[in-house]
Length: 422
Image (cartoon, rainbow, N blue to C red; front, side, top):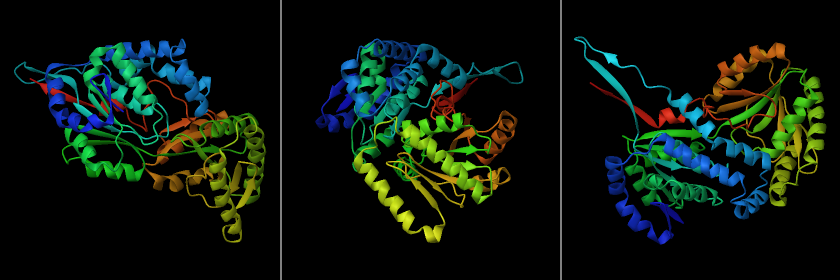
């Protein structure tokens, strides 16, 4: 399904739409503009309708299928509210810059303009994220071409279609195409039309986007990141329980999901004790959640079985339950876990934080810090100097707050340009 000009089209309309796309974008840029307030008002109306149950017929089934809680939905709706989006614009775009002064009394005024056209290549690990990426592009005033991820649930095109119904002025600024990644001809056409390519995904996706984009097109990459927890030995059971809930809720699929826990120790005996302690907590918390689907569990079971066979070489200890596990290992490399309630526990004395993590530059995102208040400031500073861009509480690693940066950057600024006139 395709969304163009505020209307849904069959996929068979792709060739005709592609043929006209560049000319239509140029015409829109020349004759129209979209103000942040128009976007904010439409998003606020949509969020209120969802909260009032206007889309329950579709939404309830979707939430059940993807195990989305009411609390998660409420947090997502808050991001679409007027207050949140106005705050986001204030933080990311700021006030108008003071004019520059030239000799002779002449001034140069500075104006913010959109890049023009953004081509969004979305990832499928967070439902609704493709639509939110487009909304960010709209807030900066851009025309937005969205390529849906292969595993898209249909939520993004529904949300964006509804926005166009609420505010018809947005219709010429939103195009959504459900084309496969193998359709290189279409993707190259989208990239050629765009002034910026916004890509969400891992190294391969970012590299592919750079190959697609002409050399004079900006590539804005929101690559896959790795997140973890860091715990001192006085981390409380309450903090570890909150972390276990986070692991179960996110299934460790998000860039902000905890893959494992670094412990402030170099003592293997202490590390083993910490691993057993967290295993017991994870076992208790996991029982409160629906089982991980059988196919996913089978894949992880094979991985863990292979690790157990290699234990005499690795020295790893695996505490394994029914659909969850904790692997204690002495090596300290930051790595992806087996996902789906399976995490690692590794040693990382605080004096080794910088040399151990600095090599992962560009991949670090969130650290859930479990420690006493007397250590929080010092450890937060060390983690930030190593490259971490968010330090949170144990259960807040995947929080979504208006005005927060994306991976250390403000997207609305990246989707804009400054024009000096005078």
